[in-house]
Length: 81
Image 1: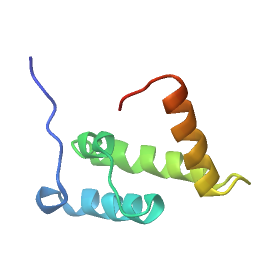
Image 2: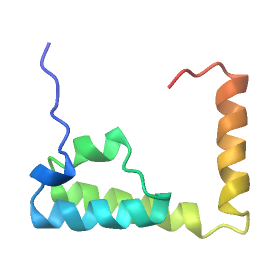
Image 3: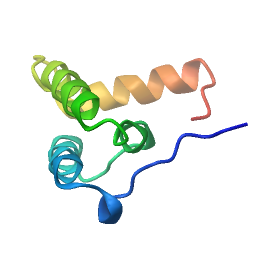
Image 4: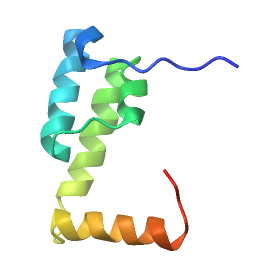
């Protein structure tokens, strides 16, 4: 089965590095694997990350509480990822 390569920061082209920098800043210093896969398509990576973090950071709930809700829901439904 073919796997899609994950693009790491040190092998990324400048547009992908810029998106990774934005993602790191928006997410507290970490780039999730899904974004590394999207690094194969720089335009998609930029669009998805801008949309996702725009929605994520625009709410009235603190980011810490949002993360806690994600963690609780993941535990509740026994998600192991």
